[in-house]
Length: 245
Picture 1 (cartoon, rainbow, N blue to C red):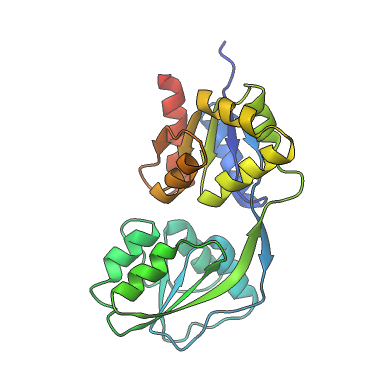
Picture 2: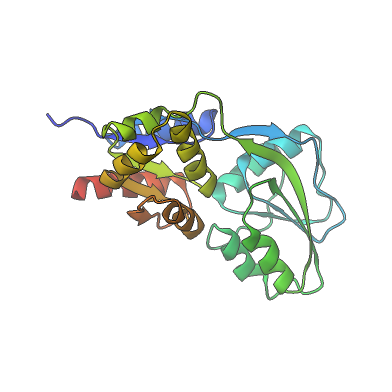
């Protein structure tokens, strides 16, 4: 009987990492949960005087709900179904989800309608500039509120150790920051070069072209970009790629 492949997953240390582990196990993998993102709330809330408000994550949805934020008459936009579900779970109505679950997808869907509009973007401190620049280029007046900062958790890096010893068969990176923090964790252990060599032998899957570009710029060879910006698609396609190896 074949041994289940070891697959690193870097989701935040909450129900997202639990769900990711369960999904990978159901696909026949041996998950290596190694959270690379910890949330530090800023205490700020989105403005309420815009025409549109954009939220980009489940974390953001939960933080604004905890703060009692009221979007008023703003058009509430969510990048992707996971963010939309999180907003609806905490009592907000979602008015718009882009066809492509990315910053560029949102810009593409809204750019014809936002000339002169006021848009509030509420997200982490590591959001893609594509969203702000794209909406501004479309003629919108854009304001960004940083809801939380993303830091590398203490003790992260078990997956980097496995990569360094050649015992990691795949890795699922969900953002540029997870790639950067993975390599920081490897650096902290004095194993960056060995971890990079280990990833070269593994299947590396990512969400989004920006993540792929970051990874390649840091020396990580990317094998696949998920067909849609969800962890479900990333996990399934990474496991499929492993089976083809």
